[in-house]
Length: 131
Image 1 (tube, one colour):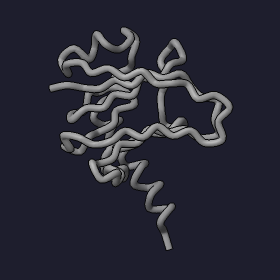
Image 2 (image 1 turned 90 degrees about the horizontal axis):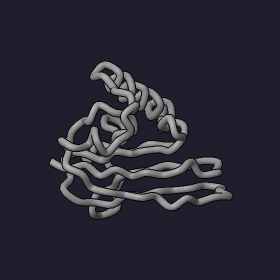
Image 3 (image 1 turned 30 degrees about the horizontal axis):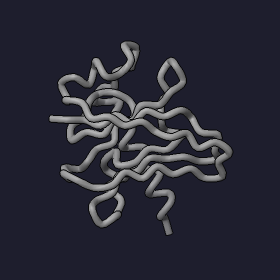
């Protein structure tokens, strides 16, 4: 019944991402779930900061990373070709209090929007790994 909120400024980097992994450092499902997010996918808040929400259930907000029911694991923050590397802040909140832990103008993500996001992930992976 908890969620972790990672807050970070946009780095000056060619690429950046946040990815979840299991206790053996294997990436979680990034095809059928939202186990990773990159700087092109991430949605900034109106203040320009990014808030990544890690939770067992969909919080209906942008930038959700799905734990895939893993009770523990790792969080990998990666910058590539970076000239700035802002340090993230992370805090754990009760899932029921998540709304008060995020800016009031945080947009909501519907079930249909989430399904389209995951369909887009599947399409990208299919192209990437196509023979």
